Length: 485
Image (cartoon, rainbow, N blue to C red):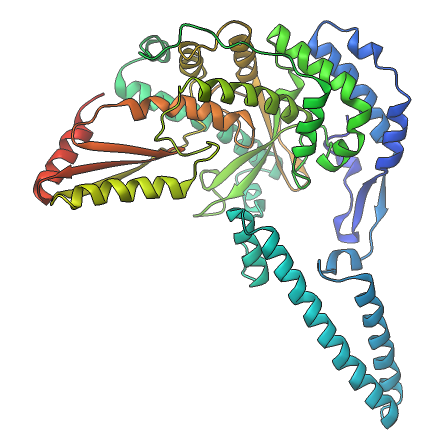
């Protein structure tokens, strides 16, 4: 597959050399392919390897490095072809005036046209702003990003080059970063186990679920219509994973690969095996806060193969539908849930507080934030919780395969680290990760703490204690938090 560049293939970014793929030519080549070599395979890893070879060969054939003009980098989104023509005419008049500064007719012509151009530019820019505000008004995240763009608010620097300035060469520093990201969850989990004087197996064995359903989840196969629908829902601007396939390319060639891709997805579901190639994550460190030379201050975002997200989305739809239809998730978990938001969580918190204060009581909120929440998830404990939730048989085998033998590579600029295995956590940036995390966190909301209410948004938890006065509320908070549950 087209993936990471080797040292000899790095484009010179200073000269604006970019890799360009002829999507139409790739699609044309794939239309001629007979997919029997893929659909005849009974092993999902072999089928995917054959599929990757065919698609990767077509992409490589029609990919080349070209020099991109500077103008492509400077154009604002509201600049239209008509504005470009006006801009060029204005610049031509300006050049003529510089050559003939005493020509009054030319000076008036330039001044009038310049003012005309500025007026048109302002109107086009204003219309563009109103349009994107209207388009994004129902999406809080996009609306906020739009407002920041319009107000030209400075964005946080995301460059992670400072991580390469550690001990040794940049490659050694990068490998140390990758080692940190792959072991941070394991090290923290081991510290917790030592403090509790227990083991991961003991914790998994002690997991219980009083509301465990008697029936098991049934995993239905997918079809080409669903696969096509999932591909259409993918974001255009998602970064590619190890295979280098971008969503824009996948959307264009989707009709030509629906048959083999659907076969691979169904083969994975029926055998309970998640393809090994799709388990490798390309990690991009995103700076949070603090010293920039410490990996602790970066969030490792996993860039996964876009095709793996198609299979993840299909499975996630089934798992979420099963969990929601059987009411297996707490109503007070507002993170990663359809129809629930931070606003709903705040409304509930406000309602509970008002209810107690209206009766003369005092409320004291304790806000909890779990350290490295995604990174410290134990696959054994999670699988036990999934099993008790009714996810058994092949669906459980598939999830066990999905979480086992995961590896990652960290990339900063053009450097890539060695590949390392991950023994704890779920990938940040995956589609299934949030759902699995929600199942893992669900038990915390079932804890019965006297005189307290619990509300969660993902790993952010508030425990709201109430008492007859401030001293009573404070005492109940101390007692409630010190009791081992």
